[in-house]
Image (cartoon, rainbow, N blue to C red; front, side, top):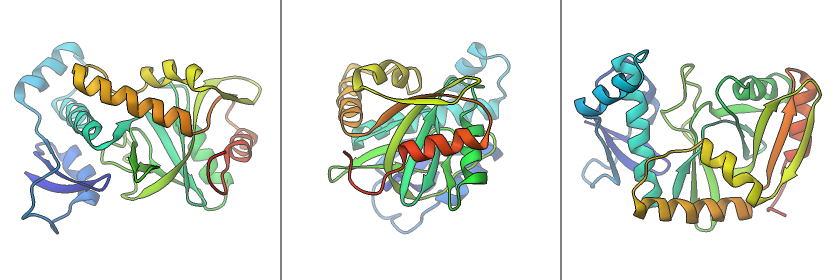
Length: 239
């Protein structure tokens, strides 16, 4: 069992595979071993077998990684946090989350930010955590950061959320909290207990009511990155 610090929480996690061991390395924290963990993550053989049955193309290593992430994010709900399947990019002290169905190009879009917007960097490329602390919303890097393992162990204020779709032309518009609910639910954790689902929905309502949300059609170009940055960039409190 390893002790990690993720999203400002003490997390005990049982790690078996090399992949998960490697991705957890930057989050190891032995400073509070005498205190109880906030969240304990353990993936059972039964869970791995169920994943392999449902997804025959998975390896045991992949199954452990996916299940460990799911178990962590279920625990995070009890501490005012949720997961969004997204690529998060940071610029000037704010994190911007770009979400989309797999293969749409969210990682490509955030890499364009890094290439063309000075000072931009990836905080998490797959499953960043969003957590509310003292009435502020923060984005955290986590070990659950995709195949490329692009992640930084830090917290940054949440600047905005954007849902991407492919388009030959670049176009972006702000959407309402009501419009954002369905795309968020498609890109977050599922199979929650009734108690956790209630907490999750309250957190989601809080996030969508206080953070700017956009949808964007984009191509793979410098102009696409500049358009989303110039539209979403924040310099102060939310409007």
